[in-house]
Length: 375
Image 1 (tube, rainbow, N blue to C red):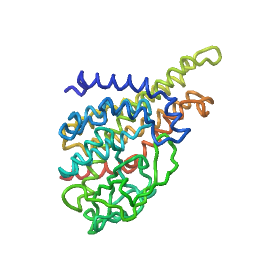
Image 2: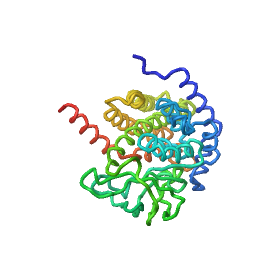
Image 3: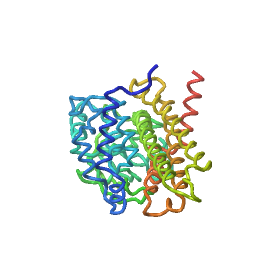
Image 4: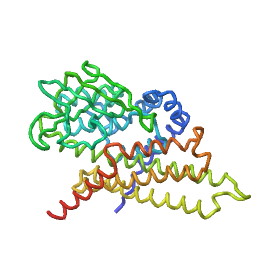
């Protein structure tokens, strides 16, 4: 069985890599981080002009009508460049939520805007440092209005629309629904939240009787919808983490070949060789899991829940390890503000918490495997 991407997908990957290498070097990420811009507007505009925001959105709603595999190759290159853009929030999460579960009218309203870049989307799930659970979703939906606080919300300050997890009453998982909130329609305020990676803006969103509508046809299906949305996003984030791991490995390798100590390249020392080899092994393990996750996501395979969790766990482990070892390989210079090592370290730590921390995904993997084996 061939798990590799097609020639067309590889060509897409190459074109995205060339664009990002030209328009999104680390100097752009540094500028966004230091100036606290919400995102790199010129990079986002370029991605939109290439049609990448419409990759997996059906043609009838203004997209390219491609699929999950094309999104995966784009995600890997975005991760490689640590791109400071709201692509994941708008496309992996908001657009996919609407594509999968929106009514025809909801899709017609928002998907063309998300595909064209006219609007940016976000997912508002977390309500603090605790893990989201059907029992602790406190933001209320009643009478077509949403009230409560969500934090942190990735790219919430730049977003025009948010998919918000809300409590609509009921017991257990049936208490949760997803609501569509036009963030520019009033009743919503935002306040910046400091994170380890300021190149990806996070905010607190406060809703005060904000107009909203339930995603889909009926209430009470939000938790099952979230599960599918997050599984898909987990695979895509894993590809970002694979791309970031490869970039961190290349940075460490290049530095080890140009830096001399005691008259020798530091890359000739066994300790450095072992660091680079360990990064490579973890990166390849993450890549294998991500490829299987991509196949399940593309085919809507029965094993997507397990594959998504495995991809997420391996991707987080690989990227954090690669970023840390990259800093170590650079030695004292790696810890300085002037070094570019910080950008992959920051992004690795941030992505490890996006759509749930690794411990949550480990628990999901165990429970899903137990349920599968018991069936």
